Structures are given as structure tokens and as C-alpha cells.
Image 1: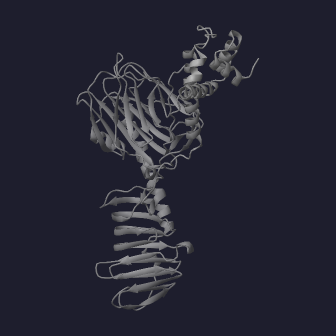
Image 2: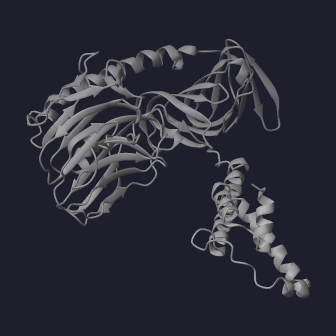
Image 3: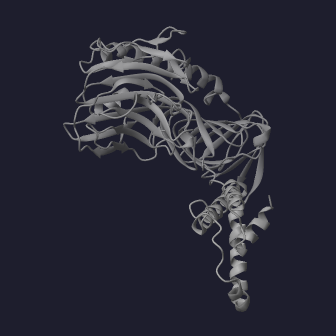
Length: 508
């Protein structure tokens, strides 16, 4: 059998036999890129006919040697066009695969320090809880003790009432109150400004008492420098104290008048124990709420594989079944929680029947938002008034409600709540489905985040559901991955709409 080029040439010359036509047809089907070569030959042939009309005329009509039903011009051009499309698509795919893709914009943070511990904190400025990254700005503490760790390594205790402005990761300004600082060698040069002058630490421990008229600095270890405008720099060493302005006589340092790290350790442990016992004492009253249908307090025996439903009026809802999730420490020492880390981790439960109104509340620690949908509590499957409470990848909290009778679902979202600064901290979330006021309300740490209008107030049908994960009831082809990366240490569900005040109490 002649080679491909010969077959094409014979076709153009009109000398192709039936057997050769069948062979060329088969080759074009097996190797689509031959179509492009055939088109090139057509173009060349057309050009030659245009430039050598006499020769073309002498050729007369080309014999129709190709069986039309097997190998027509339309067939050839169709195969050629298809080959061209395949070639273009392949080139596009190769280009997309090999070409460098633009990188997603990297997230940043403005924080320069973190509030690591606090005892009996009352704030004049916006409330800050332990674990919160701190950006430059003012902290006005009414009472209590707060421990702040600057990113350069300095550790500062402030005692209320006090005012401290964070300037950078190595600098702050104190205009009122007492503070003590530990400055390791790697944070040498840490600066505290006062209205009377600036203290530059050379790797040491010192205390600062800023009053209305003056300020005193006490050096417990190492050495500090005192800088004032138009005044020669003074050096103060271990065991010495001095007023920054006015009478600058050297005095003995008095460490006992400042809070120490040991002191905050003891007071912090006592405060956490008090909060835990207060929570335990209030649990019995909460469990007896007439509208409470489900409450997991996560204080089941360590190693237990079920969560007991403590709701007095929740007999119709069975205990939850733990799958995969492991026990960990909750909001306080002695408080238990469940960690969700693996695609298998979840708590299975069943909420039978319908509910006209709904409130759900949970304490959750989010470690990251790795997926488009990150489950808090989700009905199994979707459709017919099922509910999905989840956190979106961008940090919004969503209550999705499926329509009934094939109607479209509706999502009720908060503004972005979970940013990287909030990861790793305990957050109280609540959502209320309130048909009486025709709205869905979202809360975070007891404060209202958003109200969303509710058009369809038909009852909800939760059914089989999961904490921290989702089963889409797909029979084949895998299951969507929507697990939560984080922990939960309390979950409750009511068949009534709680008020703003009731939600605030739950978050304390």
C-alpha cells in the first residue's frame, strides 16, 4: 500500500482507487492530524490551478474514484476541522499547564503583639480576650491584669487602671498606670514612652509607674536608659529606681509594688477555676429550659464515644455518636472538648420531626478554613427544609435553608467574621431562625452580627445531622469533604427563638 503522501497526491490527481480511498479514510480516522496535511495539499493544489490554468484545464474533470458514502470531500474537511480543533485544544491545555500561574495575594496582618493572659479584665476601650492578636492602638484597662507579648519578644504586664498605646512590635507608650516588663536579649532596645521621657531597655526587667504628675522607673535586673528632650541620657542599673523628671535622685527599686509573672499565674488559674465552676452551676438551670431540645456539654467521660443529651425536655433526641473525633481540652482546664481534624471526624445525631423556630449555639475553636464549606452543624443530604450551618472559606458564617417542594434554597450570611487573627481562639456562635419576626439572626460572642429577612417561614426538617462534618448521602463517586478544622466544647439546640439578652448570657 502506498504511503500517506502518495495517497493524498493520487486523490488530488483523481487516480485514487477504491481500496486506496478506504485506506486513506481509515488513516484520517486513526490519525486526525493528517487532516491538516490534507488541507495543506488542497490549498497548494488550488494555488497551482490558479497560477497554471492551462494545466488545470487539461486535467479535465477529476475522476470520482472515491465512494461518496465512505470518503467524500465533506468527510475529509470535517475530519480536518476536527483535527484542527483537537490541535488547538491540546496547545491550549499545554499552555495552561506549563505557563506560570499568577500567585494568590498573600494574606497579611497588622498585629504587633498578642494578649496572652488576663485576670478579671474590665476594659474602657473595646474588650479584648486572651489569645487576641493586637494591632497598633490604645488599650485602656479599667481593672484587672493583662499580659501582652510583643512580637520582638518583650513581655509586659499592665495593671488597671492603665492606658497603653501599642506603637510597634518593639515600642509602646504608657500614659497612665503600672506596668512591668521582661525584655530578653533578642528584644534588646525595647522602648516605653511616657509623657516625661522614654525608657530604652538593654535586656532586663523593670517596672514603670506613670502618674498624673510624674513617672518612676524601677530596675529589677540589668540596665535601662532614660531619655528626655534636652537632658543628658541617664543610665539606671539593677536595684535602682528614679523619677523620670523633677527630683532625679536614685532610689532603691521596689519590686513588690508591681505585679509579677508568678502572681498572674496564680490569679489566672484561680480565675479560670471560678469561671468553670460558675458554668457548671448554671448548667442545671439551662438544661431545664422548656424550649431546649438538645444540649451536649462535652463533659462525658474521657474516652467515651457518645455525647449525652442533657436537655430535660429532649427525650425524643438520642445521644450523639462520636465518629473519629478525639478528646481535647476545652475553654478552661478541666473542661473537655472534641477535636475535628480528619475527614472521618464527626458527631452523628438525629433531630426528628419539624420545628417552627430554631436556635443553635456552639463554642467553637477554628484552626483554619481549609475548604469552601466548613461544617458546624449540617443536616444529612440537602433539600426539603434541611439546614446547613457552616463557615465559608472567606470567614462568613452561613445558615443555609433548603426550599420545600423543589423551591430554591436561601443562604443567610454574616459579614466576614473568621480572619486568621481569630483562628485558635474560642468563639461563641449562635443563630436564630425566627418565623415570628421573619428574620434570621447571627451572633458572635453574645453580640448581634446581622439580621436577614426571612421570606419562607415554613417549619424546618433537620433529621439526621452531623456536628463538624457532612454526609451528602451520595451513593457513589465519593462524598463532599466539609469537615471543620477545629474543636467544639458545647452545643445546644432550642425549638424556640432566643432573645438577644438570652444569647448574651450564653456567651459569658
